[in-house]
Length: 147
Image (cartoon, rainbow, N blue to C red; front, side, top):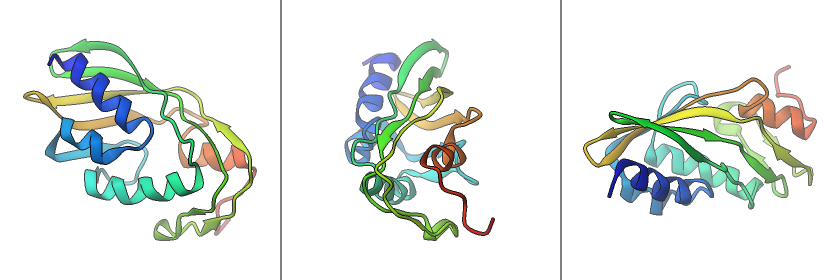
């Protein structure tokens, strides 16, 4: 399988936060970096993803491959979803955001998949302005706790 084919298979799974299936395309020491204060392992990401799936059952990264060079596959993501469940961010000291019923459509963010051999060792996103947790809060019309 080429890097682009592996990337496409991985993205098809993680776009809807099916991280168990996506894990077959990643290294044992895989990390997800960019939107979080520190890189997350696949297991840490799974815990976080479950919280987002409960809050946004139709969550989708809408990830696309935009290029390839050496051990990198360049991608973009445009997150969408409907906030139909409570978003529990207590582990990040941000409390619980009750369901609003609002839809989100975050701006496109650029990213890359780094390969180690034939598996993905890192997925990194540069969080675009208006994206990430601040973008989600803004589109839901909620403010961060402690503000």
